[in-house]
Length: 287
Image (cartoon, rainbow, N blue to C red; front, side, top):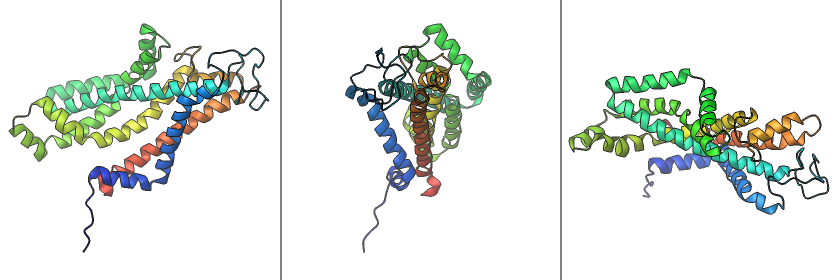
């Protein structure tokens, strides 16, 4: 009699994720776009900020080496779009990391300590929820260095941790009375040891799901700021700033809008499909 191999939680989640065709296709598309964004510009002779005076606002397939056409200043749209994807991905990923670090530590600490500390910490979250995100980011980016992408992802990440803090706090409240936590307390493990070695590892499932869904939110938020002229500044470009430029020229040069908008829509759709797939794969009720 052949015994059925016992899968762990992560092995079982990986199996269910592989069976989700939409999520796996989305992950492949994300990887391909990322590789194209970081290595694709090397195959073009044009830097992202170089002006070609002979080809200004030319459409794709114009019989030249500007494969996706040029913008109104004669800059290669292929290279600038891939450069914009780079910037948007970097800001989205790094801002998500910042928001997750703050949110996980804040929520786990508040949920585990409880009492007045929990009440005070969550009132801070409630107050920040009441403030418009965009004004906070505008103030932070203006005070330090508007257009600096590192300041931008820190500013976006610094206000994007609130929902994660609430999620982790709720998970922590359900874990703090479990037997393995009481066993750790009885063996003399300190508060930070319990938080870092027992609480945080056991909330990693919801954290991964929310991180995947947070990345497109951060990309969209950065694109919105850049669309308003408050994000990435010239000569650098993000998908938001390119869409802004394309919107101004859409009547005469529609490709300037379609190309970056197509990349943005594809990325956001794929990240959402991947997030939905991870949510289904990591749901213990489906085991």
